[in-house]
Structure formats: C-alpha cells, structure tokens
Length: 250
Ligand code: MN
Image (cartoon, rainbow, N blue to C red):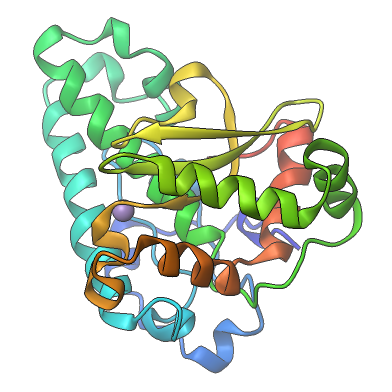
C-alpha cells in the first residue's frame, strides 16, 4: 500500500518542480505519486509534490488554500532552511529527522531559523501525505489501537479537536506513534516538531491560520471538524505499519 516508501523511483528537485498536476480521477486511485524521501529530506531540501490535485480536498479545504499553503508557505520553509544551512557543510548529509534532533549542535545564530523551517518542512511533508482521502474511520489494526489507546475513534476525534482548538496562536495537534505502536496525543506551538524529541508523528492537523483562513476566517472549529472528511486512513495505516517497522521516513 505505501508505495511512497517502497518504490525506488527517484524524483529529483527539477522533476518535482516540473511534475504536472495529478488529475482528481487519478488521485482517487491513491498512492500514485512516488516520492523518494531521501531527496526530499536532505540538503538541498525540496518540497515534495502534493500526492493529489489542489482541489482534491474540496469542499473541506479549498484549492486556493491548498495551492498557497503547499507552494508558498511550505516553499518558503524549504527555501529558508536551505539558505540557513548553505554554509553549514557539516549538516549537508544530515537527514531532516536527525537535524531536528540535533538543533543544539547548530550555531546560535542559525538555531531558531532551522528549528522553525526544518520543523515546517517536516510537519508539512507529513501533512500532505495524510490528506487527500475520504475520511471515515480507521480500519484493521489501526482501528484496534485507536480504541485501545483512546477508548474509541470518537474520543480520539474529540481529543485531537480539543487540542487543536487549545493551540493559542499557531501550531499543530498531532497523534504520535512509538516503536511499539502505542499512540498518544500532542500539541505543538509554531512549527515545533515532535522529531525534535525523536518522537514520530502518525498524523496531525495544521491549525495555523494560513491552513484555513481564506475559507473559514476565524472559525477554526469549523475547519477542524471538516478536516476529518479528507483524512486518508489507508495512508495513515501504512504510516503506522512503517513506524512499527522503523521505516517511517517522516
Ligand atoms: Mn501550514
């Protein structure tokens, strides 16, 4: 299922930039986009292409928001990250997760810039992967662990929504997965990434205003509720299996 991790096709930065828009009909067949995360997640970092069309999350998330969010916001995080690391040659072979876990090794001048922009790159790379779906509920093993660790799927939804609504200002509400497969919930400010603590993210929601303001303005609760309709459970199940196997790229 998780073709992204298994396929060996290498997507260069140039190819990524030139990649034509995937039609919505094709996006429905899921996992059509091969991404080599070793290219995406090492200097010079690149924004991975959306694995679906900009309008694939309509009407919950409008196409204009997706386009600005992916191309401009994520694009800026990657550009700023590359710029900050340009002369830091000792980090050019460091993977994004390792970079986030080693912020203390950076110069003080660069540390905050890298924290914000490497976090932004990691968070958004995850975020695109777990949307473009049809919502509904998790199935199989993931459904069982959701019930085990949260009580029920409805409880997970309300807990994650509450965490998303409690974020003051900008940030994220996420579900973490440890190597034994246990799930837990976390909220982070700004672009702080759980990877800074070497934790792994199963999925999560971006509650920066740039993620919803064009369509929802100040109505974050409406966005947070609608977001569940585009969550891609097959992809999240694949991420869960990868996390347990130790192969979750980001
Ligand atoms: Mn964002």
